[in-house]
Image (tube, rainbow, N blue to C red; front, side, top):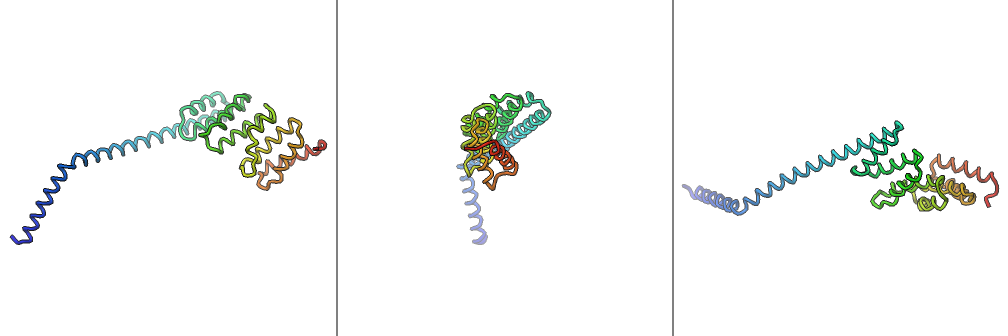
Length: 221
């Protein structure tokens, strides 16, 4: 046997001995780690499936509620939305709350609708855009079901120049002012809409019509 062959055999024996020693010392740990990886992967896959399944069911329930509302079955739609509001997932519970409030308003239940919109507006966990929309909808209902102060407490904060819904908020506040006979405030708010180049065409047209109506009905001073 050559020296090279002998050295290779010795090295091979040493490697085997080292491998056995390593396995005897750490083998159980390696097996445990492998089992944990397999279990963690299985748990993650199961959770993803469960979450996706819940989200799909919530989406289907919301679509069914919208279909019921479109068919004029408001009571059934509200019942479906109430279930989704309590047991939905993701954004669906909040959307269900807004849609339920809208259906309550459409059913002539203004007081309940306003309370529902206020609940969303005051929910700190709701996205800012949805909270602003809820304030706006509550304010609009209060034009006919409350005072100017009631409307202002909801929408005045939305009239800032940087707020994306300022045009609608100013319109709602102007209508409330006009209803209470405060022509000067109403005219000022409608003119703010007309002076804002970013105002949507529909809001601008209504503001123009109301401004002309108020101006033509007498002095604004």
